[in-house]
Length: 397
Image 1 (spheres, rainbow, N blue to C red):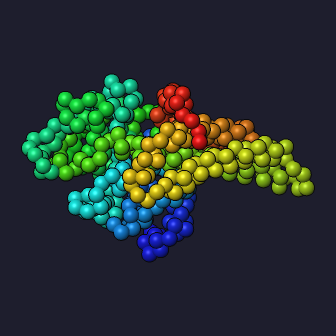
Image 2 (image 1 turned 45 degrees about the horizontal axis):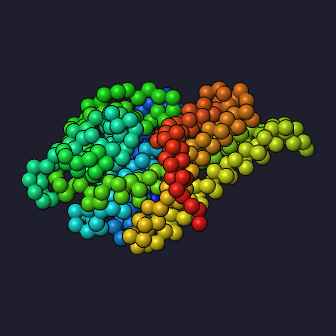
Image 3 (image 1 turned 45 degrees about the vertical axis):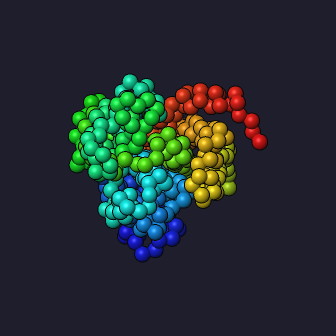
């Protein structure tokens, strides 16, 4: 049943858990096997109005905090990690609009329409020949005319473009103009009907197969009013990166939670066969529980710190611009992306062959493959190199 009347967070979380159990988990094997978009889950999320969870309450959304979004993402990931990744990437884009666009005028109206229509947002931040550096663009925005009514055009060739073919709108990075430096970037909202997408690569991957993320060439038009007013450098530091690293970490924790739950169910089954004795696998499960708890606490503590930032935008931006925050987010991303497959591996060692089999209720193959993607989504080596540079000048107060 769609959740509309009760706008409390416990009701939202209960609805997400229902979707994860009754929709996402049911279709997850087919989504994974066929590398297809999780259409059934996204439809259920639309019906529950969960696509607009980050939109402020005054504009019709649920106004969820980072911590609340993280709990929702972790809940959905327990049913289907690909579905959760689609939702999280959508929320990241939506948060960029919510936090960096005016609440009135065009953008205020757009957010209200987003709540009503439940548009799915995707992003194109990667680009051929930038070698994974999303803070540099080759494509440049072309303008015809002046003011907000000026016509725009951009042409970009992306290395990966998650679920772009299934989205309703895209947020695309590009240079401010043809003479601008590669780092002088803007973020442009492109309506799907105004974009021509030409697929350039395939998406037959080890895991996260339902995110449907091949490369695309995009040729898009629009109006100048569709350019977010803030520079992408600010959007990235204050929203894109923190929302990505925190919500991804919550998602990876959700994968680990379900793997741990399968191992726990297996151990309990062993205990029921020999009443009065503790199975030898129980000790390994206890050790695995410690690892899972560290993941939970890590993302939740950083999310809570983010939610506690000053309400004033300038003050919050100043805090997020500090080296300490960048290191905190980098550490969270690398730690959780590396811990998730370790927890799944630990669960596999407990369950044994039943976890290795794909047709077993204890199967952990999909969990393992999906969890391995984390270290590659913004390479951990690249993040470690940036952290190393920052640590040369950082002094922890």
